[in-house]
Structure formats: structure tokens, C-alpha cells
Length: 340
Image (spheres, rainbow, N blue to C red):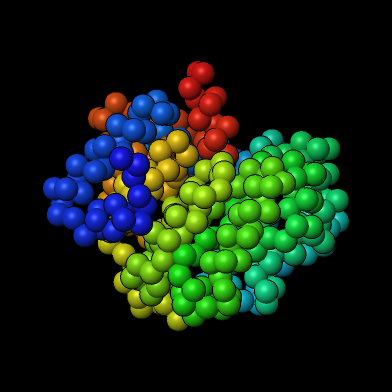
């Protein structure tokens, strides 16, 4: 019987620890069957990273650039624009190209081009159409973009530029989209964005944030269901990490067990889709436990993996492959890893 993300997923969320563990084992087996034993371990160089098994060799291999600086009109409840502070501001098309030429000369592999959204939920990438194409085709960097909501014109621009991946958040609950992201009819608009990206042949990597509903689940299964209806290059699962000076500063993130169950559902519901545990998630003990659940449930890759996650992966017969790049490149990297 075909796995139902909504029906069977709900069962896994409410199953006993033993039953959830059995489902994760099945997910791990499917992962080995479809993808082999490589575990991609990503560390984009916007943040320093070092564990016993790996250290970044440069701070500019894969950097994050914000074309709006710290400005975002949505001011989402969980972020309030503060995540933009971890990105380099490049406020003009000329400045974007100049910075990309600089990091290319320093040996960079690629860049993430991101930014805040306008009041309708769109990142203003269309204003940088020619420059994105130049960065990809002439400068020779890999280009990953955070899009926000996408219209036909932006999708065509990204397709023409041949970007390596377009990343956007997908929310499955209208109330959560409205109350947290301040977007009306959010799920329908996000589904439309997935449709136009797919129609234009843009490699799409949707993100699902577990716990966006003030630390509780609210529409995550529905988001996976929406994603499953469209061709996607990969899916990234991230976890609410409460940020100071936001409305969610004091919120408890979902437990690693809840996240592990969700990753299991994603693995069983999207058997042939590369799945990643992304960089946005709580640190400390929570991170270690989430890494362990990611390995056990059959994720294809983990960003900023803990040493404990690496050790568990090896004990389960996986082969960690380290990349100082964005995890949205996983579809290509998994093919290369299988050939090596």
C-alpha cells in the first residue's frame, strides 16, 4: 500500500516509541535502497564550523548575500528580519557582481543570494536578473537563491540564468501562514510558486520549518503533501530555533523526538527525493539528538552535523562526505558521491 503522508504520517506522530522506531528503520532501509550509503555533510561558510572529522578551509567557499540588507517587510513572528544579520549585505546589482568576483578569485564555489521579502512575500530577485545570470554563466559560481513566493516572470528569470537551486518555505496551514508569516492564503500561494518553478524547469528545494506554530506542529504534514504533488530536486527540513527580540523568543522548540518522527514521515512519503536536515535548528543537546534522528530515519544529508552524528552514521554503515557548500546542492552531490 502506498504511504500516505497525511494518514500514515498522523499515525507515526502519535505512535509509541517502539512503533516510531520501526518506521524509522524502514525509512533508513528505503534510503539505502534508493541512494546508497553516502551521507552528505554540509557546512556553508556563512558560519564557522569545525568538528574532529572536518574543518572549513576557507571562509568564502559558499557565502550568503542579502540583496535587501537587513530589510524585510514581512517581519515574521519567528524571525523579525534578524536572520538577515547573518548574511553579507549587497544593496546594488553592481555590488552583488563585485562581491561575487571577489570570492571567485579567492576560490569560492558558489553563493546563496537571499534577502528580505516585500509585503506580498516576494524577494526582489527580478531586479537582479542580468546579474544573477552573469554570476552563474560568466563568473562561474554555483548560484542558489531564496525566492520567497514566485511569479511567472521570476521563475523564467531563474530558469534562463540556470540557477542551481531555488529555495522557498512551504507552510501547509493557512492560519500559521497568516499569523506567523503575515501572508494571506499562504498554502495556495506557495503551491502556486512550486507549480511555476516546476513548469519552468527550475531545480526547486522547498523548506519545511518544524514547529513554526509557536513550537507546536501546525501544517507540516500538509506542507509535505503539497510538496509531494510537484517535482522537486530535494526537500530541506529545518527546526524552529527561538531568536532573541522576536515574538517567539521564549518558545520551546519541538523536541528531537517530534522532529525525528517528522523526518521519518518525509522519508517514507518522499522515497526517491533527497532529504536534508538543514542548518536552521537549535544548537547544543537538541542538535546532537536531532542529528541522530536524522541519521536513523534516512536523511541524505545534514548541515553542520555534530561529531556525534558522524560517529553514529559510521556505526550504521554510512559514509560521511563533507562539503563546504549549501545543502540544496545535494541532488548533484549525491550522484557524484555514488560515482566516487
